[in-house]
Image 1 (tube, one colour):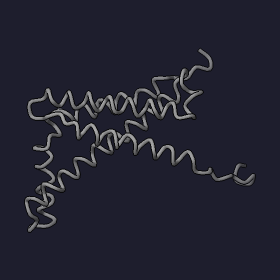
Image 2: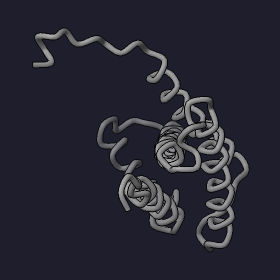
Image 3: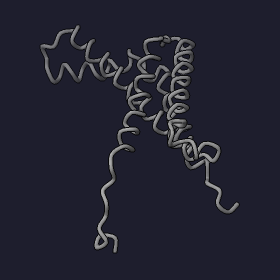
Image 4: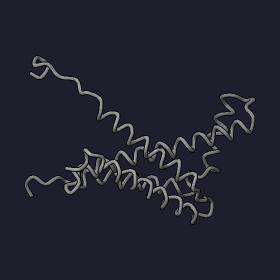
Amino acid sequence: MQGSRPIWKYWLPVLLWMAAIFAGSSPLLSSERTSRVIGPFLRWLKPDISDLAVQRVQLGVRKCGHLTEYAVLSMLLWRAIGRSRPFCEKSRNGFALGWAFLGSTLYAVSDEVHQSLVSSRFGSAWDVATDAVGAALGLALIRYRNRRPRPRHSDSQSR
């Protein structure tokens, strides 16, 4: 089909990232497992660190993980939606941004439902809120990047 875009090229990274998030919602990245790595590392860096400080750092690392994974998901969704034929004309006016945010947030809800079904995990509305903030931050980065003026290339550089 001449002129058609390979949609899978844009949607495959979204699906792979969603699969990575799903895998992380298994016991593999539970707080019990990650604390086995973060706690000893912190104690190696600072042997006199308190248990409370270790718990706070672990919580911070885990929440930063939520923010980051959903920022990436929202950016991948924005790209896929913006490059898909039915939406490509509307992507510049915020249409793709809105759908990317909604898709990321709905996936966050489904991820927390999944975690509530795993025996060593539990679902949390706070994590959904953190994920939604991460998605919004990712989309804000896109908006910021797209608003900056692009540098002009001189004729001598383009040759």
